[in-house]
Each structure stands twice: as C-alpha cells, then as structure tokens.
Image 1 (tube, rainbow, N blue to C red):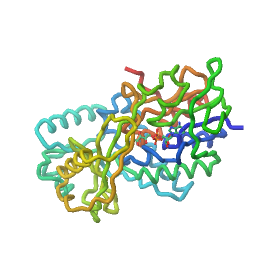
Image 2: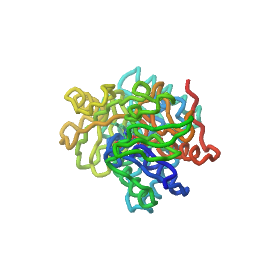
Image 3: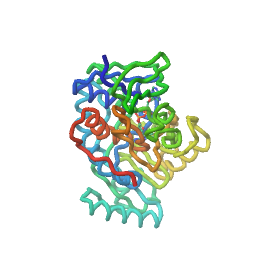
Image 4: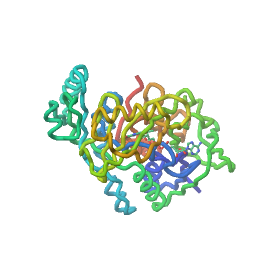
Amino acid sequence: MRDCIIIGGGVMGCLVGLRLRQAGVAVSILERAVPGAEASSAAAGILSPQAEAHHLGDALGLALASRELYPALAAELLELTGVDIGYRRSGVLQVALDEAGQLALGETAARQRALGLGVEALDGTAARELEPGLAATVRAALRFPHDGQLEPRTLTRALAIAARRAGCEILTGRLVHRVRSEAGAVAAVVTDEGELPCARVVVAAGSWSGLIGGLEDVGIDTTTVRPARGQLCELDARTPPLSHVVFGPGGYLVPRPDGRVICGSTLEFVGFDKAVTAGGLSAVLHSALALAPGLATAPVTATWSGLRPWAAGGRLLCGPTAIAGLSLATGHFRNGILLAPVSAELVVDHVLARPPRHVLPAPS
Ligand SMILES: Cc1cc2nc3c(=O)[nH]c(=O)nc-3n(C[C@H](O)[C@H](O)[C@H](O)COP(=O)(O)OP(=O)(O)OC[C@H]3O[C@@H](n4cnc5c(N)ncnc54)[C@H](O)[C@@H]3O)c2cc1C
C-alpha cells in the first residue's frame, strides 16, 4: 500500500519524495516520461536569491533560506549516491551597462543592505579587475558573495537515485489524467493504466500541473499555471572566462569549472512549444556577447529550451489545498532549483501535519 502519490518526477517531485520516504511514508512518484525530463534538467542552475530578488518578491525570505540548505543537500546527495551536483558558492555579479542600470543597482544595494544581506558595490574598473573577461562597457556591478550555482541535470539525476535508494517507487512512462476526490477528500489518481487509490497526493507536475483534471476546484487549471519558455545556449570556452555567474540587463552567463558557459535566457509565453528559435538564440547570444565579448570565438556546443512553471500572480503553490489530502508543489517559475529544498520542507510539513518550518507568503 502506498501512503502518498506524487505526480511528476522533476526536482520538486523527487525531493519531496525523498524527504517523505525518509520520514517513513510509502511514496510512489508517477512520471509521464523519466525523472528530470523537463524544466529541472533544462535550468541554468543559478542559486541567486539576491540577483533574483525583484522577481522573487515576497518569496525572497524563502529563497534565502533555501540557499542556506544547499551545502547540506549537496553533501547528503554525495553521501547517498556518490554524485557530485556541482554546487559552488561562486558568487554572482549583477552588472550595469548604462546610467539607468547603475542607478537601479544603487537602489538594489540599499534595499538589500537594509535587510542585512551581503552586497559589495564595484565600479567598472573594480569589476573588470575581479573578472577581466567582462566588457569594457560594464559601468558598475554588485557582487553577491553568498550566491552560487550547481549542475541541474546532475542534481535531478542524483535526487532520483537517492529517492529510489530510499525506497520510493518511481513509475516512469505513467501519465496522470486526473485526481479523483470524494466528499472533499482525495480518493485516487486516474492514470493511463487505470486508477490508483490513495488518500494523499502531491501535484508536482511543473508547467503541466494545470492540465491535470480534478484540480479546478482548488484553482489549478491552464489559466492559473502556464509554461514560460526559456531558451539557453552552451558555449565551450575551454578555460573558464569568468569565475562568477554574471547577470546583465538582457541575460546571464553561468561559467562552469570545465570551461562551458551557459548563456540564458529568453522568457516567452508561447504555450507548450519547446522550440529553439533563431530569434531566441540571437537574443541570448547578443546579451552574452554584450557582457563578455571574448566569448565570440567560443564554439556553440548545445542549445535547448525548457518550460518554467509560472503561476498566476507569480505565486508559489506549495502546501495545502481545500481538498483534504491534496498538496501542491509547483509555480516555482524561474527559481525552482533554488527553491526546491525549502519547498520540499513546506510540502512535507503539510503532508505529515507537522508544525510548519516556513511560512508561504500570502497572495497579494
Ligand atoms: C531555461 C530555464 C532556465 C532556468 N534556470 C533556473 C536557474 O538558473 N535557477 C533556478 O532556480 N531555476 C531555474 N529554472 C526554473 C526551474 O527549472 C523550475 O522552476 C523547476 O525545475 C521546476 O521543477 P518541477 O519539478 O516543478 O518541474 P519539472 O522539472 O518540469 O517537472 C515536472 C515533471 O512532471 C512530469 N509530468 C507533467 N505532467 C504529468 C502528468 N500528467 N503525469 C505524470 N507526470 C507528469 C513532467 O514530465 C516533468 O518531469 C529554469 C527553467 C528554465 C526552463
């Protein structure tokens, strides 16, 4: 008998599954493809609550807490699986290329210092002394020393291995059509291979969460959870041209220790279309070369896209619903890798009816 079914085997589903299993819950993860098939493997792997503070809004506190959980999670996954997820506290630079951008950086620094966060302000010369690969047009930068990065594909793989080893059942190629409730409580999930009875269900189906039937009564449908496409490109610089992750006005660069540089990203609401387009790549490369012109000679080694789960109002959908036994773990949009550890704690506390370790921001 299973105690809990998780729909979706991305970073959310696998980490929630691992944590529930470690708490003694019998868990099945139903994944229509394979674990990590979607956004979780497509991500750039930036862990930057501070560069993303504007997008995170009220969820900044959760994101900061989640960042602090990563060193222990990386060590735990290495011990459980032998897989190194590439977690590095590399620091993140947010740079300005014009006067308006420089003013905005000043405001960000003041706001974050008032919150007690670590921020270093650099002029253009100091930024280039730190990162000689930066463009001569960089006028100013903020350095967030506690932010970092990891390898999302490796993270997702390690989480799936750890979840399986802990005893989670992971059913691949298993499409969930709907969640069936009776008298206001979860009764079963309906899959392409029949119905599986279960009193506790966690929806972690990313951008596809709105397509699952039976969730309309808790406000989850294709208008409230939507895919936001992001296109990325990998360059091979052979030697890392930067040590920090760099955010500019139009995109970011994520330097890996082996010389790969991930350049991102577009943000497009084009339905479930995962195409990599000429316009998208052109925008990503234009922004990359504006930040680090020396990358112009680096070969393009990969391009891909993924679908970020956006929820109406930019809300995180983590935890209880009005249907007894039904929890949500989606809506993580552009920061789901960063937010995964804290989100898993939110969901697990709800499923196990434990006192919550975190508080989800109220919808504005
Ligand atoms: C281009 C890009 C760059 C990003 N960069 C970053 C970054 O640098 N840092 C960061 O923190 N975040 C980043 N993100 C966001 C992050 O990737 C997502 O927020 C996060 O991966 C969402 O995880 P998830 O498990 O909810 O969704 P997913 O990884 O999409 O997993 C959902 C899973 O559910 C399965 N599924 C769907 N429907 C069903 C069904 N009906 N039945 C069974 N299974 C189903 C899917 O096959 C999928 O495997 C990025 C995203 C993109 C696309």
